[in-house]
Length: 368
Ligand SMILES: NC(=O)c1ccc[n+]([C@@H]2O[C@H](COP(=O)([O-])OP(=O)(O)OC[C@H]3O[C@@H](n4cnc5c(N)ncnc54)[C@H](O)[C@@H]3O)[C@@H](O)[C@H]2O)c1
Image (cartoon, rainbow, N blue to C red; front, side):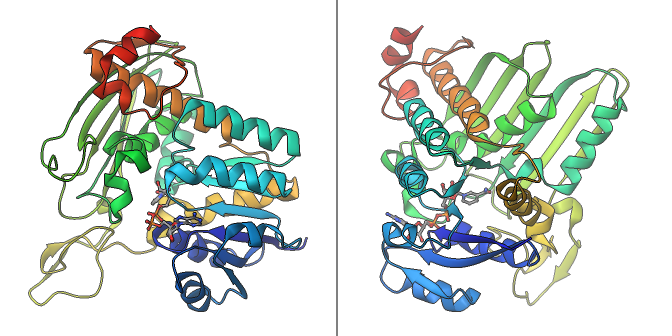
């Protein structure tokens, strides 16, 4: 089958990850274009990754009839607009997390793609991370009996780009940025059950001078069958990215540390090139990872999406997945605002961004 031709929107952190991940699976897909507005960056990105075409305006890229699938790696506030434009141009869409900023945007993205007859695929790579996939396979086989508690944590020292810290552009803090992974993970791991309630404790412990957003977040998700998901997020953990899970059932448990658990415990007095995402130093004791993208599942995720475009697989992470996550994010911010558990469905209308439900509890109260 011919390779799926991909255009990337954005040319920085996640765009690099997607381009490298596609290159790791060269039989089934290729990046043929990139679009990014900052002067020269699309061109530099194209040269770095050997991509033939580059644009400063993604609308121009969407006019290329050869492109079948768009990967959106632009800031959160642009996800909905770009998805709707890509769908109108007849392109399948892979959208990075979180799906968007508001529930209305989620609805509009899903509708636009359905109307255009294109796929909307939600890029939650934890569904493809080999260690986590193994944990789920064992759970589904019954290895742990009835699973009643799933924990997922993603923590690091804070985002690399300014827009994440500006809640007008991001929609929220560590919960929105990192918690979207844990919410999706617990939901997926427990068989995509309905969410019954959400409780969250949010605070800004270290970065109040830099952001209105939460930099510490603990979220408890109660599922229909009584099982719990616990999601822990932080922008205050120096020492490199920490991504791990714990799974508990009536007959057993498993633990997986995606990065440190796959790393080489290393001591160096002089340091070296690179250890792991967001590690500020490589001197002293560090945990350098290898096959970082593979351990996260990015190449496997993009291969799955390419196969979905070819019709040989069905998306295991789609617009609906992103909308479930978005509703839980709304409920979590509302919970923190009101200091109580929020029952789902919880779909308040007209909320400009999830974090408003924490900062203005009256909005959350009015939605109950
Ligand atoms: N799945 C993951 O683990 C993961 C990891 C990192 C980021 N992300 C997500 O990917 C998205 C991008 O994050 P990032 O870390 O790459 O951010 P970044 O700041 O490093 O890059 C953002 C890119 O978007 C481009 N951009 C800005 N406005 C644009 C526009 N109007 N049209 C086209 N491009 C535009 C910028 O020029 C830049 O190249 C975010 O939604 C983020 O949450 C996901």
